[in-house]
Image 1 (cartoon, one colour):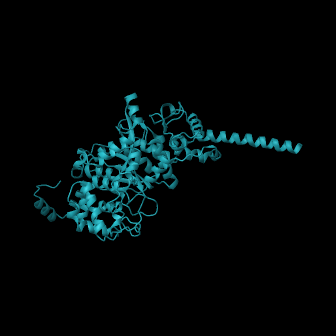
Image 2: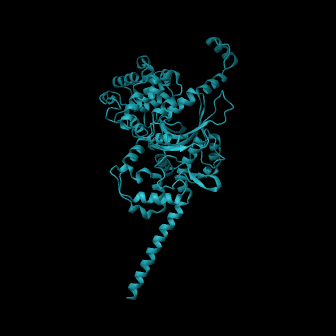
Length: 335
Length: 168
């Protein structure tokens, strides 16, 4: 009898401890950098943090933009919820990055989630097989040296890990910019309601960015490989899926777009603390510099613009060759 | 949304007035496309081989020819859809025609390499696409007899179905 009571007491104790540790895990995760970054929180006035995402549906709790604990609680509740008719609308499918973090921090919760086939996310991942990512910095306009900003975007290296032969041009680019497509219903609503400036994400073939910058605008592209392993790339795609359809309010018209990419990278790799330096780090060249200092980037590869290629070839000519060229094309002066 | 998506896609692929002279001028392409390609469905449609008509007629398969490009003997390179997706070829040619044409005349270059990938015509072991590039150079005049990407694409498909082009 006493033994049975002892067992019961120990079971009770274990039960309480288990519940306690789940709670402890929850509050620990809620305040962890990884969770804050997955929610796109950035430092704000008076040492507080707030979420960057401005369109409805990204934060599940009404206070989700300011309260990471409430947002975690709301996310946990949404993860447990019944699967709707359109399974892709379930939170487990809409928030794969949060799912990764919660599953890692509180693995005991995974069994309490419904089984849901996230077909849309799976199709998207299969459509964009990625085996590397780079931060691409476009230099300034050559004819506008006073421009100090440049632009950054992400390049997702296409692949399935078995071969490295396909052309870089067939990679994908993720851009964040003002005046995104207004065909996006979420952004359209946000524009209409607020009348404020929003930026949005777009995903396109990399060759379009090459055409835009290197071929049409004479801007060299500097491609800095991001040091992300397989799990990091998985996290990057997951966070892009979460935040991609959403709009982000611009605090500063020009500078903010580069910072948003920094936030995306930090959401995939919480060890990147550059995001905490906001708003000191906002210009594209600053975001590259701070990531470089933190060792998040590999050696860059430079993609010469059409103008740079021409200039380099012109410089390689001897004086006699240059004269001959000038006579051939009938130009008095070569750039 | 589906209708909108199809509309955007068809406008883009049928060569709207805005896109008609893209190849030569090459101005502001990114901005045009940023408005046309959005986050989600339509991008997936372009990048995943579909059989519902948006990706073009599947009856004109190059695998029926003597070329081993894109056939089972030459599996796709990187990514599941590479070398199988006709829509992606169209869009690629649409936006890069001037560069592809120049590379083909030279017989090499990353734009002709990219096209070789999209035709599944690169040796997976060696990464070589010399067979495709050489064919493009030899048949340059007949391949690039138009500024319409769809015509050029059809020319390539026909050439690959006629020629014995060895990949690599």
